[in-house]
Image 1 (cartoon, rainbow over the protein chains, first blue to last red):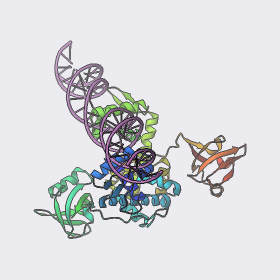
Image 2 (image 1 turned 60 degrees about the horizontal axis):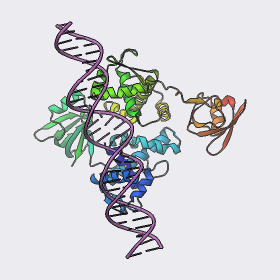
Image 3 (image 1 turned 60 degrees about the vertical axis):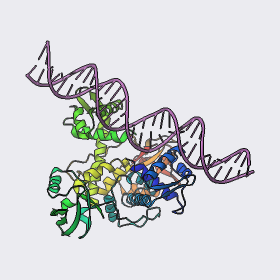
Image 4 (image 1 turned 90 degrees about the vertical axis):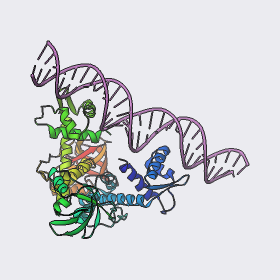
Length: 213
Length: 213
DNA sequence: AATAATTATAAGGTACACCTTATAATTAAC
DNA sequence: GTTAATTATAAGGTGTACCTTATAATTATT
């Protein structure tokens, strides 16, 4: 997808900017990446089309709120991996930055948060840079982790075992379905759907991703 | 590069084969990946050109020794990450496989070995599949056997006597350290490290493995 | 041996992120 | 205000890994 490279750009813009509202000139991005001005300009147009950056000709780019969120999430992943590499694996800290650059694209938000918990929610990376806080993404959450009363829409099922899909299907839990969490305990979750109420084992609910409203 | 996708193919061939010398039909790869027969054929030709597989028309592909090594290294990374995800981050084991699929391409051999050590050198993945042992890369050389001027990085110490580790540690000879061979004679080797120069008995140097640049 | 099914290969196409060269538009400097 | 420098954009090209359609070669079945 567009995602990985786009994220790198957003991260770079975030790092390069001094004040949120002062545009970062494309020349700085050109230098940062070592790409040609034309390539940078092309990419900026794509980012702009996605509304991740605002492009001000002859001035530069600023991050939109969405773009900033993506950049912060990337920085968070990067710096958590740096901590993991140095603290847990004892990788020399000079190497951690580069190695984290590869890992930061290889994990989901969920794994990132688990990693943060494992590391004890560190506040900064080995080089001292602050780790941005986790942002309960407007995006995807896990059905199993929602409080009673939460409402949203099923987005996807993270694993495609036939048995699981059948279990979910018979209960009407399909991508697109609207829901409200009616109740939950340690092994079951009760959710209200458009036309009925369904009981679902927590284990199955862990495979279901939702978008909250 | 070619690397990432190529590795996936080699890994798939390794998984799909029953006996090392019986070729895996391309049709099986087509089904495994869900790609078109033409795409698979194209990729197989590339792998064959690299001598990672031997292609037997109308029969299938077998792994060359090199190809098998790449496949085993990939499997090792994959299964170590699965263990990390389930054991350390408590990711549900159904999700571990898919997530490990992304992480396995994001780490170097060195980080992989550090991860293995951290995990306690597990023998199998959460699903019970055996984790292939680490294979000393062809690149790995012995610090004692290098000519003057050779430069590289310390990878590991092949014997873990406390005295040896202490001797090396005080001289800054630790995994990850970059070095240049400054001089050597029949009983001593002089190596330049990042910030200083160290003299090391040849006998100790024989226990140190390095990766050349 | 003839036909059916598989497998191989050729030809042409898509998307992505990069590239270079060249020209046009704008801003900055004198 | 004219020139110089920067920035934008157009046009065309690269490599990788995928795609479809269509035809050729081989193997399997009857």
